[in-house]
Image (tube, rainbow, N blue to C red; front, side):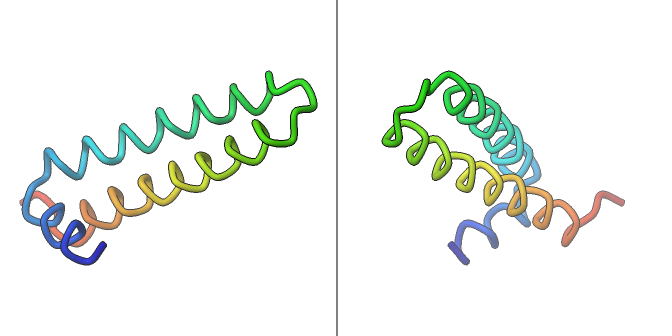
Length: 70
């Protein structure tokens, strides 16, 4: 995880891609959780994907803030 963060700090495109991917994952997981229709397994997997999406968003933003464009 640390190696990915260091690579994202030096590569802005990768950081932006991780940020966008995390956002899309969060949106899709939220939609699937809404459509789960009471299935606890789908709700559980969707919640885990939402957490993964939030982590991706946080990592992308943190990497972009650590090495701002001049």
